[in-house]
Amino acid sequence: MGKKIKKFNHERGTWQSYDACPRCNSAMTMIFTALSRRDNKTDICSDCGTIEALEDYAKQPYTGKIYWEEK
Image 1 (cartoon, rainbow, N blue to C red):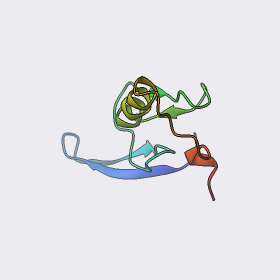
Image 2 (cartoon, rainbow, N blue to C red; image 1 turned 30 degrees about the vertical axis):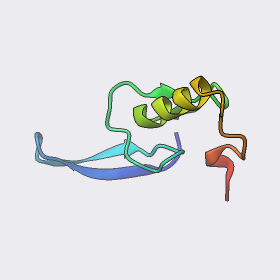
Image 3 (cartoon, rainbow, N blue to C red; image 1 turned 180 degrees about the horizontal axis):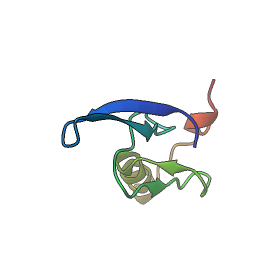
């Protein structure tokens, strides 16, 4: 994966390093991530996975550049 985000884990009392979601740039703290429907190989956070599924369900998918390829 690419970018990492550090967050404080209150249960353990330590700082943890998490992968950043390439779509929304939030920390992916969940054990299970979603596979992007845009390229079928990139892991994204669960919320972004839900958004992509709803875009496809509504038959109005995002038609621009893939989020993590934008500069």
